[in-house]
Length: 277
Image (tube, rainbow, N blue to C red; front, side):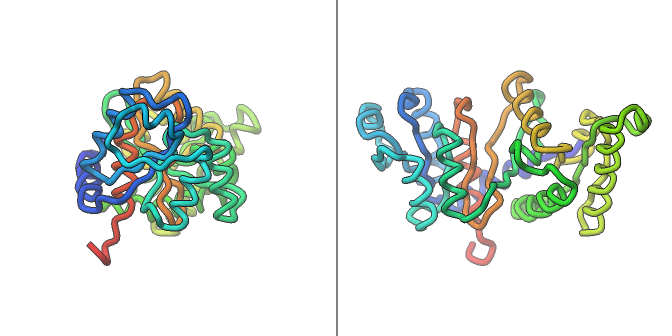
């Protein structure tokens, strides 16, 4: 099993060193005392800015900086793009409006994300693809992993990639779908190795992959999203957030998440620039 404890410590240290100005979106009706308390605890990593409804956020009595807006999705993205904040965390804002506006501002048809997760017993790993419209072809997955590796290496670790597919190797011949998935998985691993990325095809054996790799590549975006949801919402695991693979720092989060301090830490750490620090 690959020990990623050192990487998490690196993220913490870099977040503290950067102390980035991180904006987090708060949707109406979600500013609970426990939520604000957890976000406040992230001040050891960043200068946190809450963006949301004036009446609701004022009622919390927090001493965190607040930017009032009746369109927090737009405000969060606009402030990030204009560099009035260094990084952004979606927080409890809805995905459709927030990510839709981010895509329009960036001029892209879709966003690609890299999730940092932990299993119920504390094994940390990266997962791609995690969006239902991501990684649905061999070329897409190769490109997605290549971009993800650039982000992962910023944390001072070397990637070890496990490519998954739809069956065991001995299942070849059971169905055309399984055969295609196995063949595609083999091609993805081969192309990644050609790019100098340490990658291996594991078939459907995610339980073996997690013991030997720190990056798990799902067969497609729907499967990746199901892995994420099963782990974090049913299986006792957790998620730090999913950075968008772009030139700016935007960490996507699920509205079902109850703690955002780890996502704020991740966002602050991603502003690290070796040339400046």
